[in-house]
Length: 287
Image (tube, rainbow, N blue to C red; front, side, top):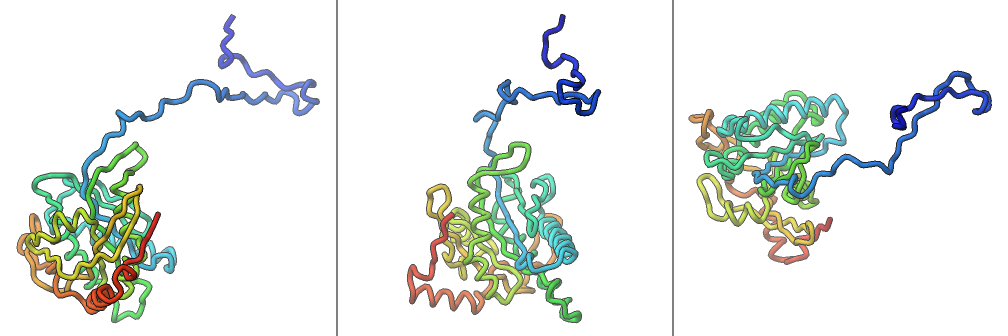
């Protein structure tokens, strides 16, 4: 006789159950004390180095759902265009990760795709596309469809458990993107885009002045605490629209934005306030 409880037939419920629904089947109980599916061990959690670009649309929660859908489609089209013009093919990056009102892009560590390409020319091209899009809306007064974005650039180890990506590097990028100082900088900016970079990106790339990249206009406005570490974020206002620059890859010969032109009036004011107010201007943001 088979004594396996899992194989035992389900007994009908009769008079012993108070006469309720003769012939009804008794529900099978699950033994929660039994063995569980094995959890992912440390050996299965392997870090993968990625350059990270995160984008978020300003004021998305104030839009209606149909408008949100339209803005999302437009932003994804512009991201595809910016990466294509910069010569970063799909094989060099992972599929865009949706953030609801924005997107996350993870770029593989390949020699032909240095992190400098994110700062120049990807971000400038994106800013140029947004500027042209917003300018075309002037003939139809509909501010709900104007797109202004915050962009964060960072790099580090990223993990995946089959359900999605996670890790401290992504935490830093998202905190930079959503920091009150970054949002405030975009609200005061005249252009459609504000860029914030991590300390690693600023000290490893920006301050060295690689081609098309200048440290002028970056200010350490953001202060974070992530996993017990205090970090800074360097904020840069939008590039000057329409400046000339050389694309790369499939975009050779295309005119794109000069990524870091003259600082706008907003950052001049922030720089003066920073010098006058010292640390009080750099508010602490703790998570």
